[in-house]
Length: 300
Ligand code: PAF
Image 1 (cartoon, rainbow, N blue to C red):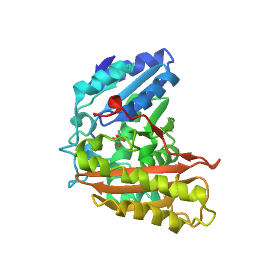
Image 2: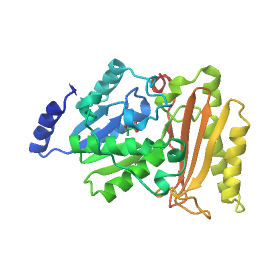
Image 3: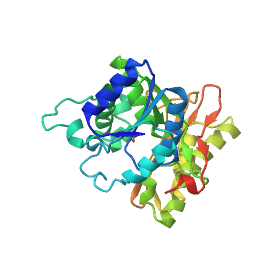
Image 4: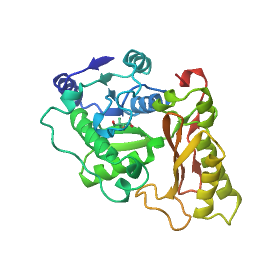
């Protein structure tokens, strides 16, 4: 495994794999890796000749009031995990290489995707995400890029960007990886103390309850799905709901009536952490709830 820190070194490595006509699978991350990230790396490796992972805590996607300075970081541990996962190249650029002092061009998503849910709670967030991901795609020039379905709105924003800007990268969204009790894996779970950690399962329980009510009754409505999610989170005193929504997974427009595909999306604050989760009702009527693996290897 090679660890590359400069743009010039990355360009040379890219020329080499492209010269040999090798396909590149790319996993962009902000580090503090968990089993969810590693599932993306595993898929990137299995589908491509070269697997590249970036670790870059992107300042442009954090509002001044957010957790940029305390965002968890552990590069030595990340590198050990990536080495064990068979990564070929890890790219860890310096902030000044991605955003030089005269940097002045951003990708600004618009429409419901860039206005509702995460975009409403975190103004500017998707501008930062779209900008850094397009820059990383230009630098790495991957054949395929791998993201977690947990960040469903990020996936939808990036798919839109790739289509709108004719970016020749195939984006794959892989199932959410969960702890044994259903909590979606996230680097931000590290903010949770023991009691908040237990309370944090309220998001998954809310999604599960809504999906179960959808399966159980023909009388289910958008309003009743939302109510089920809201009531489940309200029953957990340590959790404060930001939103519980039922929307189109591609546009993030709210749905007027139940249909597949359909995304149930939820966000809540639990102690010091702000957590998001979702489940997707597929076109064939099955729920994509992700995969539970749990156990000591998946938690940090
Ligand atoms: O999902 C993340 O970790 C980040 O938003 C990403 C895609 C690496 C961009 O900074």
